[in-house]
Amino acid sequence: MMIVMNIEPISEKSNAMTIPSVLITGASTGIGAAYAERFARRGHDLVLVARDKARMEALAARLHQENGVAIDIIQADLTQPAELATVETRLRDDASIGILVNNAGTAIGGSFIEQSTDDVARLVALNTTALLRLASAIAPRLAAAGEGAIVNIGSVVGLAPEFGMTVYGATKAFVLFLSQGLSLELAPKGVYVQAVLPATTRTEIWEHVGADVDTLSNVMEVDDLVDAALVGFDRRELVTIPPLPDAGQWDALQAARQAMLPNYRNEHPAERYRSVA
Image (cartoon, rainbow, N blue to C red):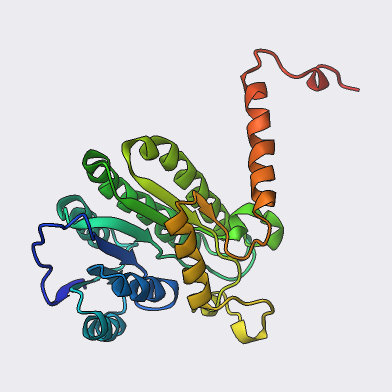
């Protein structure tokens, strides 16, 4: 069942896009809740989307009391097409929403051959399909307005198949590629797209894979992660990797990738494939 409720209605403001409303998915806890807190402190009205209504109500009441912002709650399971469609409609129709934080996501435990096809399909539906549809719902309106932002939460796992989370990593590689492609298309129209790539972060996602986060090493706290991501947001970084000390390593990876681009246009196979030796 899906529930839409308000902690004070969104007011009609003459400066609606000066301080835009922010829609955040996966907003009941963890990274999404931290984003809600930070944007509320900045004076943004919020639309919180998650399955856990009670947690969102408690968060919304506290943030409204502390910051005086208006907050809408949409209880929705984004793997359910009808409920996802309601959030899409809100993004298309509500001109006050100028920032989307695509944070909702999950993971599952086990190796690829141990994971059920249905579980993998639900993982892909949330981590990629829902994120894509929500970005698609808001992007045309932001492009027409010539302003706004889409923040997609990925993961460093999308860069590292060696970490052994094959399907989860593939969904996060999709998030990064989509974000980079969207940035190339939308930046000239005034729309900022940011991909945020956390590493191990203290969230409830570890319960989904059957791991105890307290037994893991080098775990980043959620508040630290989001504060770093917002530094990247304010700097208008295209890709923000909070745990990476040397930004030059990312720049080198990008340079190496781009150096190969001219060779992808060769008419004939490379010489190394013309001999069986």
